[in-house]
Image 1 (cartoon, rainbow, N blue to C red):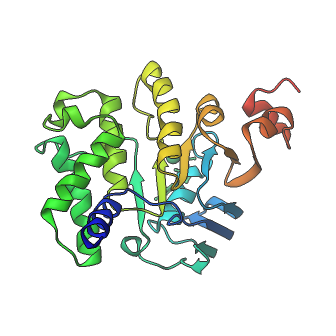
Image 2: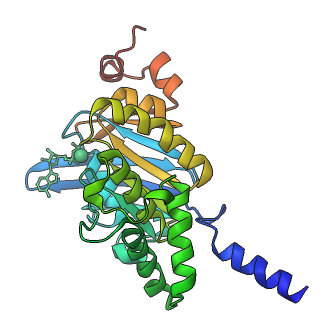
Image 3: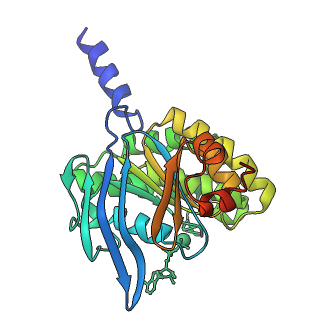
Length: 264
Ligand code: ADP
Ligand code: MG
């Protein structure tokens, strides 16, 4: 029994982002100015724990700024950001337990894929004051398996496609066992066909690893196909929050109606 529970514990510790570890986000009355320009204007938004939410809107509407405020990369001028029920408005980014993926691949070109993922796990170990190289190697491998790329673990970033690079970037973001995943136009630099493939792929990944995911895009179709809930931005304000069906069938404002291209 002792050895059974030991091996179970080892298996448990290999699980990636366990259910129940994710957290919700509450944005309360957040404004952010850059000089005289108001990028966010009294934004209120609740993102439920474990959800998959798209921030959708035209270029310059404030989507990335809100994502950066949630991630602690930007401090709001006014308002409060709550993470998992705690006021995190001024909490430093490295204490927030979030994973990030941005548009441009941030993989290290001189490292094979497994080392790129391993890098994320090292950060996790440093945060938690642990070091277990054997366990770490297994975790890197299980993360590569999660993105269905374990057979490419020895390749270098220069030897794989753009879509595969973004999948590895997601695996590395998950390596820190984040409670929230923040994705800023993660497929933005890829060609349209690869972007389409990645939509379904991201949904499937979220089913396997149901961490709270906030996803920025300016592409209506992408938001409709990927997200469970869509937040529509215009000029630093939220016009509507709803399911893809809600915003399509019942646009709340003329802007939403025009932007979503609804015929209602
Ligand atoms: P989106 O992601 O929706 O395209 P952003 O949130 O990146 O929009 O930007 C909103 C507006 O704020 C843009 O007009 C942008 O130029 C401006 N902005 C964003 N970040 C900065 C910054 N660090 N300094 C000055 N202006 C900024
Ligand atoms: Mg942006």
